[in-house]
Image (cartoon, rainbow, N blue to C red; front, side, top):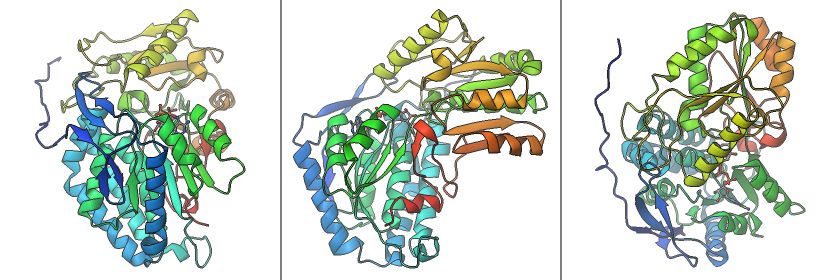
Length: 475
Ligand code: NAD
């Protein structure tokens, strides 16, 4: 039986958005030297706030504050003391979780059920996890007395603003480094809320600094001569530019870049469960996920059945208001990203793939794209090779496990993959053949702070999460 869901909006009253925001430097909010920019709600195009832009002089001030805090306070503190601050931050994130989740959904466009149930709890878990490492670093396998690097310059993207901040800041602080972090220009608000959380936690001034702005601010940060460590998550193009900018310096670098993951379904897979995994793999967070299962490789003998069930399931996805608790697919983060998704989808059609979306009404304002599947895709198609970073799935078929491996690995990326099969031996064999940093078995897009994450090839280098995530912040 079909039935409609009544609206179930989450209240906005829990967040208090100021009309303008400064930079967070040395424990205080200060003006920026650049031209302030606006951040908007992508679901409505409503202007949320004006945010300061950090110019090179501001970045320099932030790096100096981080350096002072590093040499005078943070690197001298015992691991147990640092851990207390991290535990405190983790608890405050839990206490203020609803507020952070609502703000994230407003600034980013992601459904509240995802920010509430995934992004923010996982961010808190990350701080708890690394808080636990802070006084045990000598047991982490990096020598008897591992030392921090100094000041970390960190640049993050807009798809998981608060979670990516946690992935960056928690291991850096646990290992005794101080931080200057630049959030993405379309999603600065939860990073600025995190700055307030640092104040609330009485974190010594300068240990965490937040500089807002766009590419030029990021460039000034990663190129700053007193930054010892560069940690970047974002596109492969910008990652390449950063690798060039720091080449020849002594900076330690980790790059978490793009992906074009294969989600591989064998004929013995639990098909309904696999369909849920396909949907979660590509429509979670509007497909704005570096490890999204954007290429479905399905065994020929079950392809028709899988596609039929997938289309039926896609027809039940609710697209719309990110703050509605029943929404499955929210708004596309920006007009630019929407234009990119549209362009690649048009290319897919022009190159001869079959395009399908369920009937769905999209709101009049804001940036929206319906869940979309392309069938009859070949490896030569651009939609099979390029990261679309939207709710668009390309379907390819295979006959043998060997063919599945060849197709899955036929990409410049190597971030993640999924295998759906009833046979453990086959899954293990496949996992050994796939050139991907993370391989999920009969599930997809599962994250745990104890598990390392990172890529092969053009998906970047270095690992975040787990014991491995400490290495990038230690000498
Ligand atoms: P982007 O590369 O355009 O921007 C990322 C960040 O870099 C932003 O903060 C931006 O302002 C900044 N930036 C831009 N130019 C810069 C420069 N020259 N120097 C320094 N900083 C600069 O990426 P995006 O569009 O924000 O994010 C989407 C991309 O991020 C996708 O490719 C996605 O796959 C990737 N991503 C990867 C991971 C991962 O863990 N591997 C996680 C999330 C997103």
